[in-house]
Structure formats: structure tokens, C-alpha cells
Image (cartoon, rainbow, N blue to C red; front, side, top):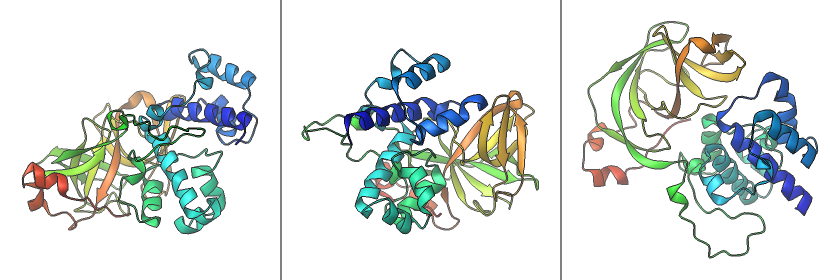
Length: 313
């Protein structure tokens, strides 16, 4: 990668970080997609225009992306780790074959001009293909930036990592009550805790009851929910309205004053007025019924930290 390409890649990385928890307005969506996807030149003129339009700090897009920037961003961390697997596989074509996706999707997820976010579903697909434990793509391993020569540098990346292992309390019950994905959430007897990699300080685990989440989540499954982590398109979420109604949906995108969602099985699209939404809680993990020994979760803290969480795709 020459100097010009490296500068453009840095701008694309900065753009991904900026929009990790922000919505791209409709009138700019095509331009941002083309810039992130390396379909057009990302020069200084375009960078300054983008910075002014979105109120970014001066020369924000030129600021060199650091290891801490990558470690502190869930999306950048997943992208970085996915690209290490591309190298391990022997190239993007081999990566696509191993993950069993087409080459165009592989390029959008982990290629030079990655323009599609690696959400939880894609992360699990990649982890399974490369025989990595669930959550591996969201963990800090070894980060080496282009042009880095001092391999002895040892930043305490774990301190700024997007994720860390926590003991998540299994203390809620989600009950499917309607055919349109409507659910209720109830406090439940605390069955113990589940060790899980999460960036959330408010994560909780819940037992699901009913068929309203099929096929992604079935009755009896345990789900890990992060209420304080920004959901990204493709995530399974619980949409909580100001009217107190709650729905399990798949987030498509948010534009202007509307939030677009689909059913869990991707059949049918619906829209919520953003002004009517109180909160959106993202699903961070799924544990199939019968695969979690809850007696184990009531053991000592030392035993809990040694258990390996196994989730299903």
C-alpha cells in the first residue's frame, strides 16, 4: 500500500468510527457508502467537505487511526480481526469460500473498501468458519498497524477494549405475546450469572418464552442483551416504545424521523416513528435451550470465570 492509498484507508477508517453510533442522513448515504467502499477517490477536498457538513473537528479524517481507536470501536475491532482471518485464509476469495459467502459480500465485510458492518450474525458466521470461539471477533488480540516497526510496543489495549468478560445476571423473562413480534419483559428469579464478553455496563440475560422470536431465538433459549450499546443495522433488537409496548425485531436502518425494522425471519418490513421510541436494546448473544448448565452459574466466582460460553448460530 503506497502513501496515497494509506491516507485514503485512514480516512475510511475514521469515517467508520464516526458513524459507528451515528445515522447517515439520506442525502449523504450514497456518498458515504461510496467513500467507505473505496469506489471513489477520498481526497482532501472531499474530506474537508465531509468534516464541515457533519461538524467533525478540523482535519478529523486525517488524524492517524491508533491501536486504541481500533480497540475502542466494536466495528473497527471486528473489521481488523476479520482482515487478519483474510490473511490467514490466503486472500479474500479463500475467505469467502471458507465462510461460504459470495466474493462481493466478503469484499463488503472485510475487503479493502469494507462498506458493510459486521453485525452479530456475520461475526458468528465468520467465527464458526475459522473455528474461533464466539465473541473472538470482538476481542482485542494483537493489533499491528501498517508501517509499524516497533513490535515491542505494548499498549494496555485491554483498558480501552470494546469488550471485556463480565458475569451477566440471568434475571429477566421475555415473553412473546403477539404475532407481530410484541413481547413483554418481566423480572424473574435470578438463576445465576453467565460469563460473557460485552462492552455493556448494564448487560442482562433473559430467558425467552414463546415462538415470536423464531427462528433466531426459540422458547427456552437464553439471550444476552446490551441496553446501553448502540445497535447497528442487522442486529436483533427489542424496540421499547414510549407507550410501553415492546417488540422483538431486526434493525434495518434509521433515517430522518423514522426507524425501519423487519421481523426476525426477514419477512415484512415495518416502520416506527423515532419520536415514539423510548429505547432500543440490542441482542449480543444467544444460548440455545439446554446448552447452559445453570447449576454451574451458581458456583464460585472463580469457577464462573473459567467456564466457556458456547452459543449457536
